[in-house]
Image (cartoon, rainbow, N blue to C red; front, side, top):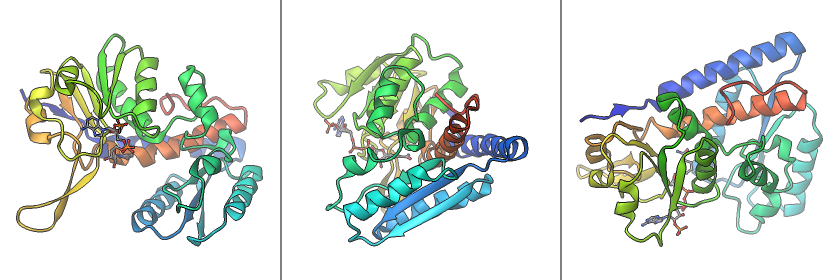
Length: 297
Ligand code: NDP
């Protein structure tokens, strides 16, 4: 068997197209331009790349993009004051504070100071609680992207056995909540899970969010299962240089799975597309309009 490749790059382009259509309608029908503010503290090179790319794509879908670049030694008080200003700004519908923050800043305090209605990363404790209780919330972008791809591939996920490897607040836990919300039977595995291979072999859906290159081999995968690889790991190539790989061993898993996301070009592109989707959702809700169908959980 050779797995269907779930093309995250193409899917993300489609989602961005849907977002752009909604943005045009908001502008034409209501005179509203959705606005996303991204706050970057310090000069982490990877974060700078992410922020640049988020800004570019925000503009491409017709939204207003605002970037705040603060020095690495910015005080917590100054950062909180900026967030308060953005919370109060009616033209800003989404606020994202790029993580990680420098060590002297309390990440939880900062995230929880964002207005939950503008928390397009879905990390605010109120949104975590809303998601956990099955209510409308802002949903973390990476798991939302995984869910969209799974729904697109399968239609209904009801009754499927899903195993999420990884229990981080950013990916693993919200992913499990979303799959539960779609009536999967969900197992969350982590570094203390006994006999992970056997746990994974039960799954119709495997979501790997571990951060360990090519950790999941093909003989852990049930024939025909769908494999969503969230991992982004850079490894050395034998001939020199480096390349990106996921948390699953792509070749051996693709030989057994029914469908699989590649790395790169799978989950990664969906994350920014879902950030834009969340910003449109936040904008609609702020203006008493229904959230766009298909772009939310
Ligand atoms: P974290 O490091 O926060 O969490 C990793 C999880 O994996 C932990 O729950 C840990 O368990 C578990 N784990 C570690 N080792 C093992 C093991 N041997 N067996 C089973 N479970 C294990 O990572 P993130 O969730 O933030 O990210 C996971 C991966 O996804 C990374 O590669 C990251 O780069 C990528 N990522 C990709 C994104 C995208 O846009 N595509 C976005 C976000 C992340 P325990 O809790 O017990 O320590």
